[in-house]
Length: 354
Image (cartoon, rainbow, N blue to C red):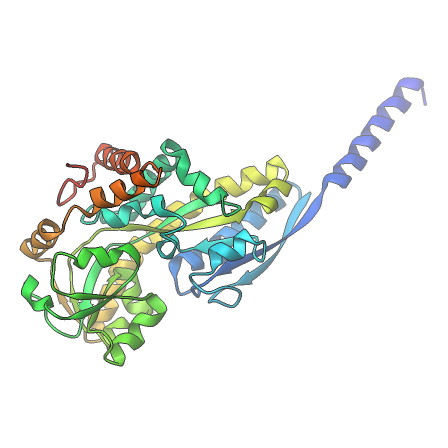
């Protein structure tokens, strides 16, 4: 073997050894407070994880992941996932930031601008653009040692109740289960909002604590809410940005660039697939409720307009409060409304108006 051949062989062996040294199996724990009956969590289990594995295998299998999946509050409940990821108890989490308004206030923007689009996928595209335009949104997550891989949204909200609702007065004195800033959607009525979450709504109505709930279409059948609240009044408060699939920054920084690229690509696909899944499931959910004996009150445009018009400008109030804390509340609101209009979204009222 001549000198050049020896050198070439040595280079090949060195590259092979280096490649082997860089290959790594990562151990990732994913947490969610909700069970996989929630479509966002189901998407992690049935699409995100298998797709990551598939793409890494197609790259030659140099890198692989051993997954531990902790759903349904087995590691952290629905309002504890943010902290679990922050502390490294979980490497990734399905964080329902709707319950983290004090720590992630800018993420609540869609909940103070109701009566917009019912198109969840369209809203998620707007939210992705908003995150790029407002760096303070990402910075808030970084304070909790994580980043958002994919914003996730849910389909449009309606009113479910055990009493009929034909006009605003029908809500007088009624106790309605609702989550997060959506409690403000009732501030133009004489209803009484009662804070809760999907896992608590059924029992709240069954035990007489509340008379109804504001929730999104796809949850109606999966949680069998129609059993205790058989009247669905289609109000169309709009699709909402409620959650995010996040990853711990220490975990993220251990990934080589090629693994990061796979995660980001799959995260975008997960965002879009999850949005489409919610929209499709919403239609099926309402039909399943009807089949089980629920009554669907088709959308009453006058009721929707009254609900929107009777509200104080909760968006401007929210923005001003954040401005006073040194956060870009007004900038976030106005940018969100502009991006929404550019995407073709029409609101029942202009929340950016003074």
